[in-house]
Length: 260
Image (cartoon, rainbow, N blue to C red; front, side, top):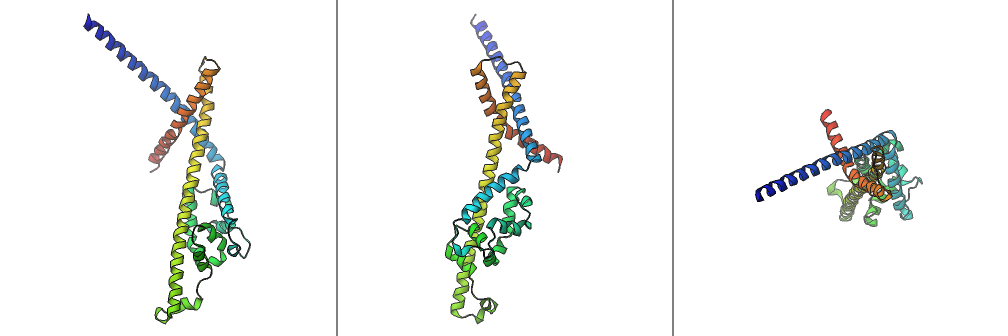
């Protein structure tokens, strides 16, 4: 009697686990499918529309204009050109769309590539130099803009006076510190823009999944009141939105395998 009871309970438990597994698999496929569709829609929109260019231009322009507005008058360009225009002229030959359409890694790599030009000719790019190294000591930036006389650099090391040696040493130290701060600024900017770009797409996938979920339920003949529909919308938004980036990563991995 006891044995029969235990066997029946074990069978019921096994059947319950089997039913739960089937439900989890079915709903998991549904959520993953909605997440994949939402990410596919967003990816298509990103390919057809210059979303990256608009986003990066808006974020970068806001940052550089904010920093430029705090620059002392002595760091203004004599030509009156903005720091953004100066940067794009150096990095992309003035092609604004090409500059901002790059991935954030390539965009910041371009900025680092022209950093040596900005630091070697600081008087011509003083506002851009200030923006890229605004957290550095202002006296260090001033040393770069107003370096020792050219004839001091032209002399051989043994021809320098003690005062000239001190000038060159101070100039080299200032240039090193400003260069380090410049690289830190670009790295921070890269991290900031990449984080916001990823978060924007994550939020968009959640919102789109919240719209697609109830549509799927409606097409599937879902019956429920207003509260049930709101709950379903919330569940679909969260779970499908979480699975959407996973689907995107899987698609990217498959594409890389197909294009060695």
